[in-house]
Image (cartoon, rainbow, N blue to C red; front, side, top):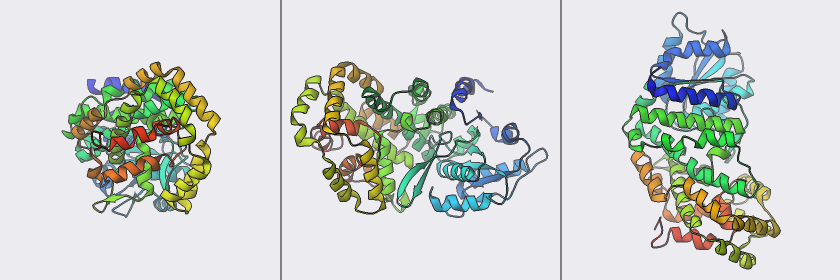
Length: 454
């Protein structure tokens, strides 16, 4: 083991003791050759089946199959390579994999990144067996996360299913991956800064208490993992290794919590929203990390304005609550306006119903924020970065740093702020701004002359 990975393995070993489902993570140079031994460590002499898409089979699957068919390799069932060039994490593709796995009892080895991993995670769970992941890109944090993000009917949903029992990361494969994939992962990782601030807000009013162990898994070394954005674009091995560690640790945090709260806040709602709207750009689905990056910049800009509020501002807003507090009929009308009357709208209404509160609770929350605002504001300031800094770091990594680069106009981005309020039952800075009566004062000005997105 080189010095580059010693600290990483120590941190991962501690994290694995907390996580519960994933028992082993191997990271290093040339570790693809350790696949058979890692598989045996976790699954004994059971048969294995490689699962990949066309790109990941070319990147690593074919070489891995050759390795595993050598003497002292594994007993391999027929590999499953998803036939679609444009593979999506949806119910249809999960069912295809379930049909392939059902007749045998082979342990799947997911060779790929987000989509392949999520589909294998869900199919393995539905076939009542564990699985192993071999990563091909530092593109997202879901490798070790509980749950799979799958599109069911019109809506992306996180479906319950355990994380992989083992994860293997060959940094030779990660470094050779297309550089934009690492950039997408970097954008997903930097989003943990505003996501952490959102968790602070929810914790402060007693909605979602912070789990210290989970917080530390995601946040303790986050600035270190983010320190070299330009190194991601250059395919610098140490920069990508730090990024990969951060993504894996974020996943382990979600695994321990059985929730994505520690790694996903308002910035992720933009991605979920645009997924539900089937957004494409130049004929292609925009990557999760690219959408989250634009969301992270936008939410960081909003946090700058939130931090500028005073205690007196919060207390004064109580006097005008009847002017800005949405009633339930107003929410129903907003959902209909933005999402129509179909299945998607019904799902949004269900999410809104779960987080709707009466005026007395809104007043309690405002008082709770106001009573401790000076301290909380300083903590939020330390947790977040200025939007211009986040944008620069994302740009240096090679990821999109403006909405236009992913096919979103400024007008649509502004509209998306309000739509994101309705997407999920998770308290975020968007709810804070709305429930304290500062929406019109803080959100539209982001797009007005002098605003960040002007």
